[in-house]
Length: 44
Image (cartoon, rainbow, N blue to C red; front, top):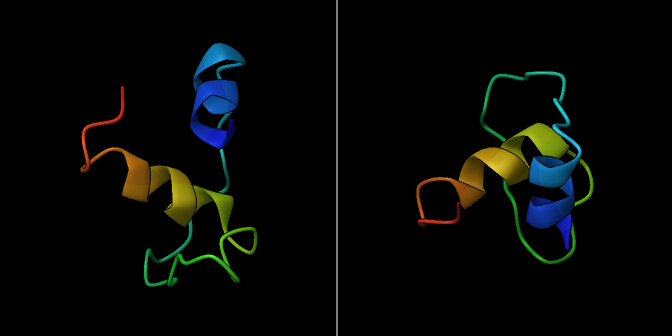
């Protein structure tokens, strides 16, 4: 849902330094890093 919603609504997130850990418990803390993690794994 998160990736699809971001693409469909053309959402942009406030950039951070990119050092956030994205896992099950902390994935909602930094949406920028969460989205950036989607791209290298081939989501499009």
